[in-house]
Length: 185
Image (cartoon, rainbow, N blue to C red):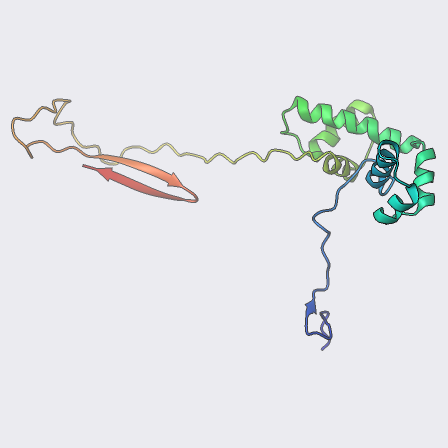
């Protein structure tokens, strides 16, 4: 039987699937390395550094930087940006309660389009919008009292001598996923 796991020369094992880098940032534009190009442009304009050296430091091709300078957003990118504005407005209007599914339903109905839910998911991920997960409220069942003690003291708590009158109170405390009862005398 063959294992799907790789074993390297140094003895380390590698899993079958490799996860995405958690430091990955998502953008709305289809241009990769746009943040690097922006930094190169600013450093070249403000400090006068050579574009060639900046591109080499950033690990991007100089020709790609100059192509980015002449770049104009496509119709699809303009459509994505306008949709992102609508998503942000809808998200802020409902104070972050709506997720990508509900936003998709509402905006597709409003815009009379049929964008896929993955498009809304990508836009919300790029804008770092996450829906507030509402807590499930527990269902309380009204229970009838099984045994209610007679009110003997009737709020007359003054005692002439110690240990003549005793009272108790029971409180239920919730913490984490559990409950404990506290009975004080």
